[in-house]
Amino acid sequence: MPLQLEYFKVYQQKLSSLVGEEKAKDIVNRALALVSLGGNDFVKNYYLVPFSARSLQYTLQEYVIYLVSEYRKILMKMYEMGVRRAILLGSGPLGCAPAEIAQHNKLSGECSTDLQAAAELFEPQVDQMVKNLNAELGTEVFISANTRLMHFDMMNNPQAYGFVTSKSACCGQGPYNGLDFCNAYSNLCENRDEFVFWDAFHPSERACRLIVEKIVNGTDDYMRPMNLTTIMYLDSLV
Image (cartoon, rainbow, N blue to C red):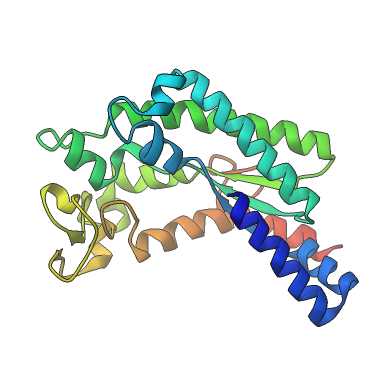
């Protein structure tokens, strides 16, 4: 993440050289940032191997507290760099991706309970951190998008959303097409729009469109404190 923030700084410098410092500042202030943090810290770090360095260093509860504190520092840095609106994507269905089902519960087809527990601890603490941070800043800079709940709506009742399955990926290999990434030798479904997941980890294009619809128009069950439509309306008044 520090490298991405450095890239953001370089972008602002290049923008300033093109349009001037004041105009560049205005463009950044009016932009909408999209932030996705936390998921890989569990999947690719804490639970990557049975006795990872982080799992030996922290209990799950301690690790969540640590991650949220680091998340807050990153958001404050973004604010200091001029970000005035940002949508924070949730962790997503960490334990229910085809990769996790294939690795941990290929016989039962159930989600990974460890990763689900991590997400259940992480999401509410991020929401509270965002609420406190916005109160401290005196304005609704950061918006929480509960993409985990958005995913679960589709996963718990895929047929209601026009999907055939929410467990198997369209492209992959092994159980649930959840082993390794999509490549030229993978199994490939005939109609990707019938699958919630495109590959072992990522939602299909159609699933993404449904998620975006919730980000744009969703209730406060999904978007807190407001959805993107409300954000755009309020910002149009400035």
